[in-house]
Amino acid sequence: MNEDQQWQKLLELAAPAYAGEAQPPFGFTTRVLTQIRAEQRQCEMMERVGLRAIFASLGVLALAGLLLVGVNHYRTDMEPGLRNVLQVENIAVS
Image (tube, rainbow, N blue to C red; front, side):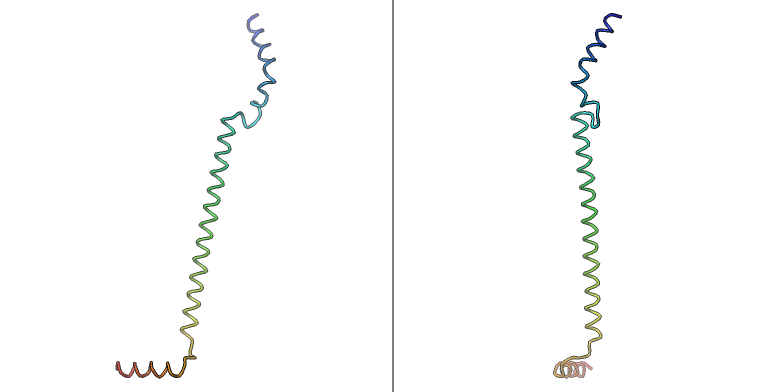
């Protein structure tokens, strides 16, 4: 029993030296793992934000293209010379 008491006293004396290891994160390895997980979460979040930005840009581009096609389709104010050329071409083809 005397030997157990000696070890107990040694542990009590050494406890202040390891007080930092008893609080989260529990040492160097845990700190590194925590930091790696945080970086992975940040990378995943940036990927999601990037994908959303790409899809939003494609959506706006598609909307602008549809709007441009729609405006050009309903446009009736062609120049008279161009209208005559188109009519001549239609007659020649017919």
